[in-house]
Length: 396
Image (cartoon, rainbow, N blue to C red; front, side):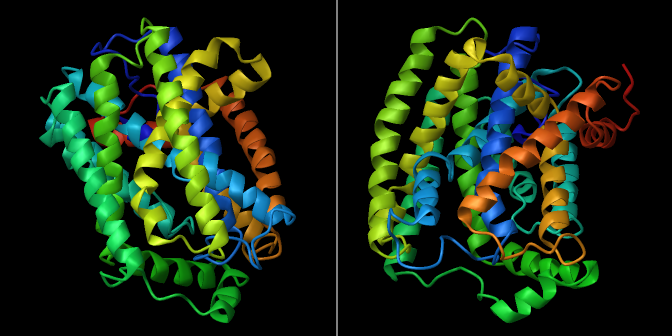
């Protein structure tokens, strides 16, 4: 299961038998999403916590806005979508094992919740997704025996409902469920202060985000994509024997619908000074889902043709994605906080994006060294030990 962030269980077409080809490809896909999600998160990690776009008037001549535009079309939402899809697919495989019944799954999700609380407070990242996944995971048990058709209908109902909700909220029909924006001067003092000041600010932000009505939106968002992952599992998309035609269909339909939808939404948002109009919010889920599916199909088709200098780092990152996800928070704290390098709010979109390959290369090297001696990552080992109430073998 592992929240799309671990390779303990690998999705296939209904089988619990693992194969090297499947593990490599799915780990690579998970690694791709891990890299992609940092491109989205780093702009908030390295600047104001509620920053959605660069400062100033949008113009393509401004590299900051041009970078934002690329992210809006190809990355934002889509990488989180891949994580959620892998969560749902891997959960079915996890539950297919005789050792992993519903109770074990619930216990695993409880500990995932604890990981999320630690990440959003002690590791100073209130944008953590693990907490949301833990809260959304009951949908998997509710649909555990459902057919692919019922799963697809359930996902469609959730995502359509979210689209209506987003439209109403953006159009002002429904009161905004967002938190009060923090004072920039107070945030600067906290985030450029010591660890205690950062912890107090992030703890307060996490509490306000977690107990705001908007949390339900995020939980349903994750649940809808988990169901999509269960559909893909049922129809065998992740199986090594899956037809290339099926994956090409994901590419053609996904990117064919997703790129125009996301480009149109980005253009409208661009023209509104960076604030998405209600119509953009209404089609966000459709465009995001399409892009996620396009990325999945395209990556699985391209996997065996990727150069080793690309494929190997993605694979090692994917095998320890939970550890890597938490280490992204640690890296951000070191780079941006006052007790680290103090780079908070000093870098623009382009500079922050340029940090991502550097951070992920360092993590890939650390992961590769760890995997030379140990079977699974440290965070994955802890999660497995807590879930199964046993001490798994760590060394190779």
